Image 1 (cartoon, one colour):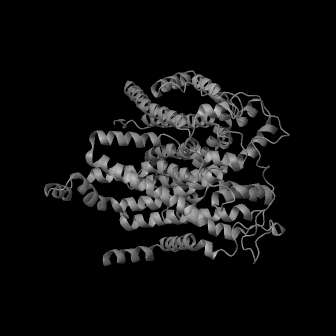
Image 2 (image 1 turned 90 degrees about the vertical axis):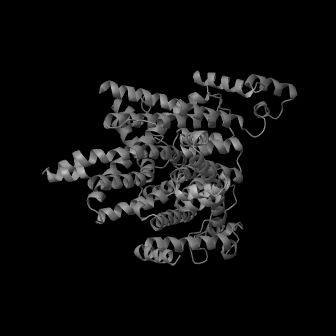
Image 3 (image 1 turned 180 degrees about the vertical axis):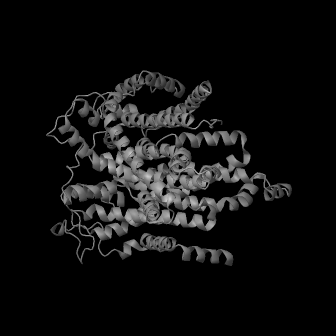
Length: 281
Length: 341
């Protein structure tokens, strides 16, 4: 463990960018957890006398067309945006690992079926498929979560399959089998922990994509409904005002979105360096 | 040799068949997974039991699923994707008239991205840890993190509102211009065929911002791949041999390294195209571009299912076609490839 910590400190010292991403991550986490208490104003309270005011000391991110405080809305939105993507990523992580590990471990028909399924999903442009699924399931936040989970499923299934496949004949698996463990136990307690590191990297690389995807869907009017504060929909609402120069409505939530995605992408790269230095590019 | 690669191309075409089948099955399931009864939906609020049953029969919804699937296949074979309830036109027609606008934009974005990403990647790989290399790294990191719709709006704010350099983000041509005669459907090409440079200039100025938005998005994976592939190739044995044989560094770079490094980049191009088709939808919304993306958004909001599913199918088939083209190109470019599996 101490070797890991030393390696962690080495990577951090070597790469201040990763340190930055860790700091950003904890900031996002704090905003997600305590956002509603940190926001200086009620994100839904409109004040038409103060509509469309540019950033000032009282309203650091300005006010929107209904006089709501953009800063408070951006902060409050963190929780919803993170919740959607964390829920979606957890779902596809669980489903993808189980399916992928089974495919890699059992091979044969199981492998064929699961590979065909992932190939079929990947045959679609993923955002387009997401639009199709949401239209079929119905336009709700839960369905955005399920949809995002479906389109991310192949990434996890593929990694888990490859990792499990390369270990199915490994000594520790044989040993577990010989000492009388069933397939279930082997998969859960022997294979599972071993494929965790690459899966964790996949999660943090995938989180950014999941956030972008969910925000994209709400940008085109799916899922989250106004007046709920959410980054994608705030950018969509602010888009109307860009051409007349009220930039702060769309730019601040967009920047928050970008920082969140950037944070997870950098974190993913950092984790990959930590776990597998050879993958470094 | 020639016959071999023809055989390979034929086999690759056959391999695409199950993928296309999978796509059709998924779109069929999506069409039938509608919440509620489509017959009730189509019949409207004033319908009684009898008219709902009639509509159900006319839509073929009273048949079993396999039968319905067979009907769906037959309709597809005739190019019939159903009717859009919001416009009243056949979905196929709607998509066909809007497709050129989307394709022109997507291809322009891709072209722009390739034109910037490949030189950037090569420069970064040939000069590790130089300014260009750091620039490349920065572009790659920022590029993948920027939401396309945000980039688009940002560019509009800077170039339209602040600098006044580009026209209002409202479609393919401003109203003072008349669209060129339809030949290819691509305004840039059609206006050149018509010899109307004024319209060409106008269409180009409308195109620059949305195409750049897409390009910024597509730049990152391409530059990253080019850099990595070039680095890999430049440290390979055959490049060292070529250098040791006294070939000029230009020959080594372009003949030996570049051609080999382009193969993985070509593969990445397929993935990038898939992302672009999705990003295109968002960009079309930002720039009020009259393509199939904005058509699909309107259809989604109006719960116009036939239109949305037709859109999903069209995009997926386009992506399969592109992947096929890339694979075939691959076979032609790289004679070593066996295309097994």
